[in-house]
Each structure stands twice: as C-alpha cells, then as structure tokens.
Image (cartoon, rainbow, N blue to C red; front, side, top):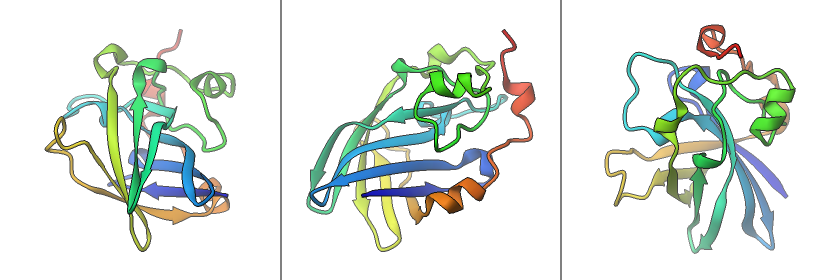
Length: 163
C-alpha cells in the first residue's frame, strides 16, 4: 500500500512531498521530493534547488518512524520534480535542468523523525544537529490530486544551468 503526503509552505515552489510504501503495517520504503532548504540553515539571495531522494535507513517505532536523506548522492534541479519521477537522472531525461547554484554547499546527510498524526505525519530533523528546525506537518493526498497541482515555478528559467 502506498500513500502520498505533502506539506505546502508559503508557495507551491516550497512544497515537500513524501511517498510512503507500507509492508505488514510498517513503513518499508519511501521517497522525498523537496528543496535544498532541507540541507541549509538559511537561504538568502537565491532560489532553491529541487531534489527527489529515496528515504534511507527507515526504522519504525511505536508512534512513527525515522529515516535519512543523503543529498551527496544526487544533483539539484532548477524546478520541482514530478511525483512520478524517482531519480535526478530520470528528471533530466524528461526535460529537467540542473540548478544554477554551487550545490556542493548543500551536500549533506540529514536524519528525520516522523510521528503519525490524525491528518498525516509530522516530521522534524534530529534535534541534536538541527535544534532550530521546526516541526513540519504533512497531510495525506491522493496521487490524482497531486498530479493536478501545478509543478512550475515562476523563477525556474532563471534558476537553471544551461549546459
């Protein structure tokens, strides 16, 4: 069984999406679509890069689960990645463009804790390293509803490497 969960910040460009696959009632695998903001404390003066990453080291526990995102295994793109795409390579084949910024500054591995809530889940980064990171609620959404949402950002063209 698969579920999609999303969290929309102040605009569509900042939307994060999780895809969770369950086996025997526990989270078995997952993907995370998000922005470079997940790997940086603050962003000023530039637009974010976008990624899709598999959730690694998933561990289930009573009221939730934990997982790791490792951006050292990907390249960031200039615009949001469709939820039907599960890798940077596939996004590039489908017309995606590399991010204009120097992505090495955002190459990191980040651990998360997720707790189940009535509407979906709440995730937060491990507090020992990211004590400033606030809890983020994610709501369940159908794949059909996600596909209807626009995935174009107004600044995508200015945010890409053209080579």
